[in-house]
Image (cartoon, rainbow, N blue to C red; front, side):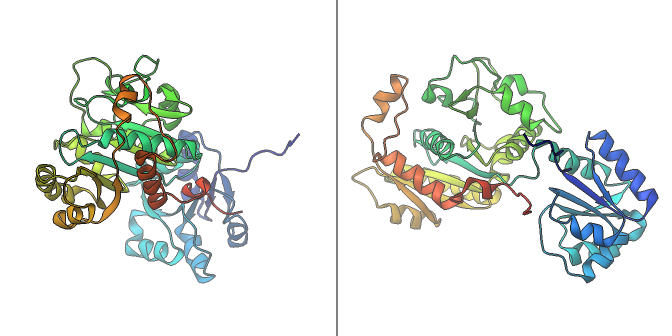
Length: 364
């Protein structure tokens, strides 16, 4: 049995005792026990062993001169009196963030708390929205989440549409115990990632956040932001099913996504409806692409993407057996089904083949 204690997840490096006192106070408030280094050789030895490295300006300058290997999770800390020199030091060591104390204490406290959730994560976040009513975006979102989970990605599926049919119905878990959106209605600020995952209903390890049968139809933007943030800290893949309507909470979902997939049936009316939606989406979605759903006879997938002036992510064929299966409470994802092929293509586009590379782990 391995009796060695686990390595600390946070390294704090500074020769400034006053700064160190402030850093240790923030660490204690976050229930974090850091490793402390007061010399450059010790900092260099421990550079790759912790998920978060907090470097005082006093050591950042000599560290920059030895050109350390670039790594994520580095914060340079100083005082408000340091001015632009602090940003120069941060640039020289490749830091992710700068914290000027005491003004930026909340930012540093948040980064310390992140380490309790397993380090800084870089969850791929895919948002799905229908270009028109009945486009099939909910079904595709569920398929991507289910297949991502089967691939070994820690996945969370979030239903952001209170007026939709409900992702839980598609997965057959509408009666399973667990929290739904109305339970989280007053959530704001920081939500524990681990607590969120453990509170939700799940299907074979896939965490699902959806709606109950209450009259709640609107979410505060702060709630959406907090929930997505917690999901991104605790998973490899977050899948959002979002409505076509514009409100601050829905926009928060698009803004925080790695990519937004606009699902559009290949017929003239659907493409016309999607064209009206594409303009507002461009303003909030950083990477907007089209999933063209076959609707023969109709324009080709390439023609739909060209008309919308958006890149084509993939085509979605017709599976005539799917609606009846879902009505019976089944969500079949056969290897050769059009839905499975489309979901596989999207996962290959946006997620690395090895789930471990989705997490920003520091090499040892």
